[in-house]
Image (cartoon, rainbow, N blue to C red; front, side):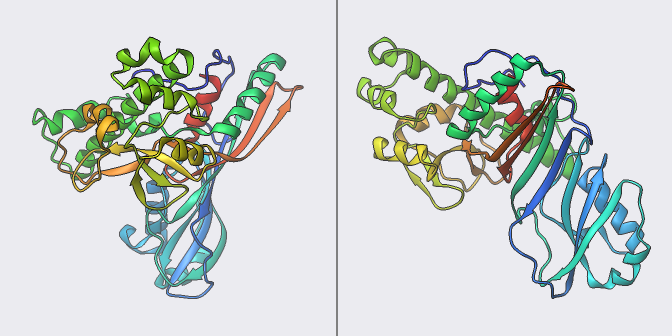
Length: 354
């Protein structure tokens, strides 16, 4: 992945961040309260140095059920300590007391009337420890956190989406262009999803670049360069949020709700600033709404002919409950924050340290 535009303009902050089980902890926030009764056993467990799929396979083998009968809400990082939930068929209940694994600890069990499905979560709570943080860097980080609390952050896909070498999207592009055949269905899907994510990230980076130009320059200096009408650039210049909305962007109510076209820029930008709604970006594919007009003039460059289903994704999200704790005796900065589902903590850190 090429360098993505960061909307906060501070210089790079020189600290150490390593994604390990001690310095990176993820706690899943379920979509709903579990009823305590029903056909499915709900397990809250803590795992370390395992992917979610690894953990599902371990539960499957030890409890004597098929992996496909185990439900989970989201995939969690391997290089982390993670706390999440799975659902199991009630037939395995007798075997639970014998479950034992050095990297998995069962924390709670309850019941519910349906299987957990992918997406059945509100978001995730993160704990992250930054190291080698000098006092001056700690003050800079605190200033950045104020801005992240006020304005939110771009909803980029994190590096995890693109594979170990960061180039899975290239394989996805080759598959779409008929230059590569991949027989393994799961791998093929992963590569195509990576390509969709790459296009989204590139579009979002371009939109941030446009927004920064509008913030810095006078409308008459740049409207031709941006291929936008002068009156529209003037309207965008007045918007209170640093990410600028363009006429006929597709907006969504936040944190969930219907998608609609932005027509009244002044009203929509104010409601975006108030976190009532956010602009969305395209994950190109079939059966997906497209932006229109000037917004689509920019989006169309990233709208490829993909046979997979497409979607709209929030271009922007708002981290909540941000907390920081600087330990000057160890030169550590400990951060805690909550993100909605589908957003990446590593991108939160990237916004801070560049």
